[in-house]
Amino acid sequence: MKFSTKTRYGMRAMVEIAKVDQQKGILQKDISKNQKISIKYLDQIILALKTADLIVNIKGKKSGYRLTRNASEITALDIHYAFEPEIAVIDCMSGKVKCQREEICYTNSFWASLNQVVIDYFADATLEDLVNKRQF
Image (cartoon, rainbow, N blue to C red; front, side, top):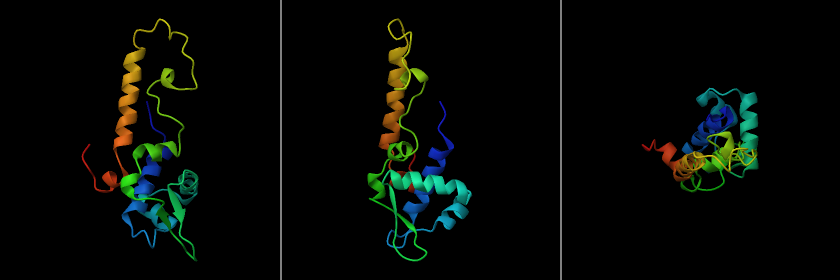
């Protein structure tokens, strides 16, 4: 199992946005500089975060980005879902794949349980936790 670069960079961008004064927001160029993410790639990340209704542009010239709700109300799972439709530790756990061995598989419940542990882990971690560097 591997998480996409967009998910990882999306989390980094969200931490940058959460760390600043939400009335002023943060400029994309500052996120790019602080996190060493190219502006071109960050454009895609910002668009996905906006589409997922996690961030908004503050109106005005040279406006920045701010969160749509408190950092304590945004989970790592919310951020992940901005980029990927699901979490699947193996292909069989994906809603896209119909396992041919499902009827005879002895390990299916093991993988399903592990998959749920990962989902719960993401759901339990808030953006506020990430900003505060909470130990998980």
